[in-house]
Amino acid sequence: MSAAILEDAVALAGRIARGELSARRAVEVAFERLDRLDRRLNVFLAVDREGALRRAGELDARRAAGHASGPLHGVPIALKANMCFEGVESSCASKILAGYRAPYTATFVQRLLDAGANPIGMTNMDEFAMGSSSENSAFGPTKNPWDEARTPGGSSSGSAVAVAAGIVPIALGSDTGGSVRQPAALCGIHGFKPTYWRVSRYGLIAFGSSLDQVSPFARTVRDLELVTHVMSGTDVRDSTCLDEPALNLEDGDVRGLRVGVPREHFPESLPRDVRAVCEAALATLEKLGATIVPVSLPHSHLAIPTYYVVATAEASSNLARFDGVRYGTRVEGSGSLQSMYAATREEGFGPEVKRRILLGTYVLSAGYYDAWYGRALKVRSILRRDFETAFEDVDVIAGPTSPEAAFRLGAKSNDPVAMYLSDVLTVPVSLAGIPAISVPCGFVTVEGSRLPVGLQIVGPNRADARVLRVARAFEAATDFARALPPIHAGGAA
Ligand code: GLN
Image (cartoon, rainbow, N blue to C red; front, side, top):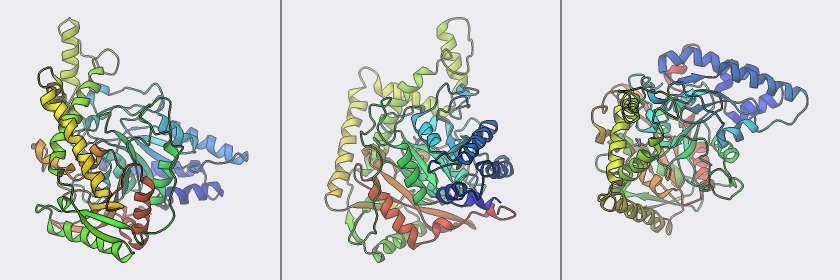
């Protein structure tokens, strides 16, 4: 029965629409798998069992009464724990928001509900989406289903694993500097960051507001297309949101397409086997009719320092609202209001979040603002221009998503800079605000474990449909995305 969830959402919704499976049964299967795997992999921070069963019942009743089904009718999905879904706990994996229940529903969640999707719970993550391994969660790390001693990537760790482990076919993450593409790569599934302006951020608890983007995970590209299509479009509650109705999907293949390969995305330090897998993936695109063109993104080396000024500046301002008054936990301190703020934030935030608030406050402070934040904004424009120049010559850009396959839990947890470098290939794209997908493109063997590798395909501003078209062509020509992690063995299907 669990096989139902190993189908993609499109197939599952089709079966439910035809009456071959009820929405109730679909969500029960998701919970069966969750109950079997969650304790082991630490995927969910909050589960909305009652709500999901009630919604499934309503969906079944609606179908029985002959009302038209939405394209995701009855499909169980998972949300990251930094998303607002009315009445459900959204802790951002932080002690400061433990027990906090969202008072309203995010626009993108509402659109998915309107299409018939059924959220089953909120997934584990790095605290406030700051991290690349899940080890910054206040509630313990999520495990990679390909090797449980390794990270699934981060920060959208639980959502990546919820899909990779076959609990749900679709899960949402948020991608600020790579938090969906990198875990998708490390877990062997697809993860898509749309153009910055495409999906409303209303109801996404903010980290870096000029970078944050709601981004889906799925096993197939057509599921990503469907979910993005459903979520995107203008929203009066988010003025940065594009006034475009939705995603105009493109048919067709990659014949005649020019694929740029930036030499900066194949650094000397890239492990040989990861390089070989990515080069083979580029050769596949070439076989499908694309032309491979060397390009350069000459300022890529400035992306990580720039990101850690821009993102921390925005985070320090966004996280100022967690003061013990308006949300979540309060620690009284020694009686004054100031000491209550300090005690609450001291107790509530983990070390990485504190580090970033301090850094962000520093780069925004009077006297340092121009030297740090002002300068970072200028470099950000230069990085954006690097992409624009490259896209004068090519249609998409491709290279590895992550500089390595899944690393061991603990391997970088005492070295923030090493951890930050996990995003060296995804952060430039985030700073430019452009769309990118990670597609499963092969495997490497590290210390005896077979681990997935992802290829990042990047498009120009608003060319989301083109990026997805290339991914679809690659997916159709290969079977890496159909490989299942060992966790599926032993009674999964
Ligand atoms: N790993 C990066 C960071 O720690 C990106 C996080 C994200 O995209 N949310 O900031």
